[in-house]
Length: 85
Image (cartoon, rainbow, N blue to C red; front, side):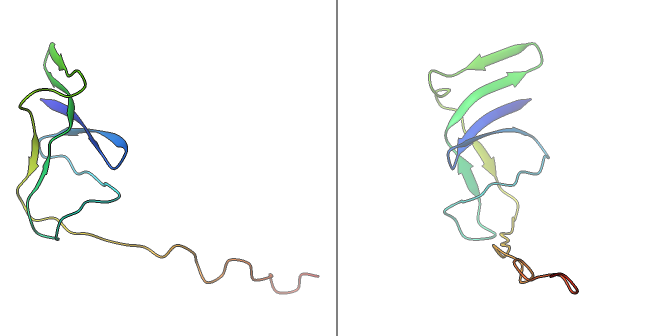
């Protein structure tokens, strides 16, 4: 079984046990997350497409999760190479 959810202006295909990297989620690290905007649910040969979302469907992440961030730029950007003119 899989679902297509929309969050942060993007759409993601999710399955049970899969790992998902999203850009912005308004929740604390370690708390449960529920995605209410489910656009499609697929189970074998049957597919349920929402108009625009599937009524009563949601995707929930119960186990702990973590947030991470990275620096926008490296400190070496824009520095000339040694020996260049």
